[in-house]
Length: 115
Image (cartoon, rainbow, N blue to C red; front, top):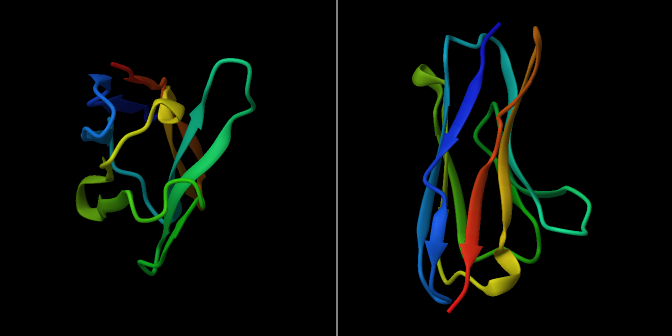
């Protein structure tokens, strides 16, 4: 079973930047979508950004213009560049891959934006 592992989270000041990475332990074939979700305390998990197999991207309104999703399909690796971070971006960030052969979730990485 392929596993996903996120990295790059941490504590950052408001206005700062972080780059999250999500690496698969093996090759994932026939990927449909790759996406980032987040879960903040007391909230429901929400979609942050996604990228389709064809390369088109989609973002939550709250992060549009600040976050950029990208991928390295050959490595089944997903990235999330987060700029101009705000305290309300504080959450555990999860990567998600949907493929023809299954759906995969990572364990999450904590992002804390605080002064």
